[in-house]
Image (tube, rainbow, N blue to C red; front, side, top):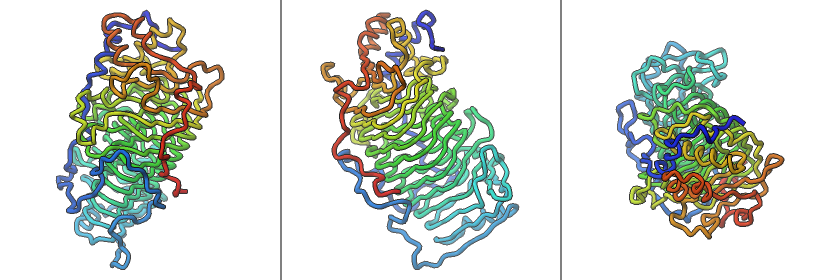
Length: 510
């Protein structure tokens, strides 16, 4: 097994256990002004991000990308504007002055822009001839590619504020910042869209591929995202989102659901990222994420070295160790079912407290003190194996990725005690903070009816990160490891049947 041997582990690596408990977190993308220089406020306040009632549940409405918000183009004048390659200047002029309920039809080919396409109107549809295939930086006979390679620094590709926005059948290539950013909008549909940067593993690549934020009713379907220096597919500070049948590869984070209420993540493929799929809340954001269903996704081989910029990326993503399949942080009412994990070098699934990135609970006040994880239901999944045997690909950095260094330190010593690698499910053991160790599962993590590799002994770990870190900081590695707990998949306290009321998000979506 290509694991770091205990004899090679440095004291500095082990001391990261304590450092991991006092990291400084920061909200995702604090800049509220789009790169076009136009203020985000579209004149209408959305209700996303204002409700911090953690007890509310999905209403089960039959929503599937149709019109739900108050704006509609029905009965209104509608127009279609058609453009071909070479008409980029005309396109930019028309976008700046177009009326609501306009369709922009782009013919196949390559369109080259020196600035963002900025849309500040409702009821806009932007449609091309096809998204093309991975690596296609120029449009073909049946694909439309928008190229931003020589665009102004720090500009997005598409920069949108406007209800009832749809974009489909095109690719955005080499955006300087975010490929498609949609903010403060209701009824957003992204379908058959590809976002990509030409070179892999470059921290200077744009941060996000698909980036709907502070919005409501979002559908991302049949899309692809490659080489983003933060997240390929992101949904943040949003209510009601569907991400399905999409592909995220070669990003730092493949698919990211952040501070979002009611999300259905279905049938996606997240491979060859630093981390495949993440669900988390961050401090300072006014919405408490809850009710997330993650179903029938493939989350395998996410071992790409972390190339996020420490200065320009969110602190959370830049700290993720390579080889992380899925992590949930400051998350509640999350159901994971029908998914496949395997060959993720660090861990398949991790459940963490928000206090590991921001220990000052006062800074979580905006989201209703949403730092605690609870009610995680992991059932009916397949764990293929090949995971947890080479934390952070062996490239440990207590300064940049302290949680990975902490995990490696614990399991490097644990190997001398018979541990076979990091278990499929790892809980940091922090929430609820200060709970008695006699409570084996106080936050209701349910792990049931999952398929595990033949010969699996332990599938669940409780790291007791605070106490184990304190022991390790004094050089008491044996004592730190002794404080961790390791359980088989059928451990009674974890063999529970979910939470109540059960999730209904997705029940009305085919």
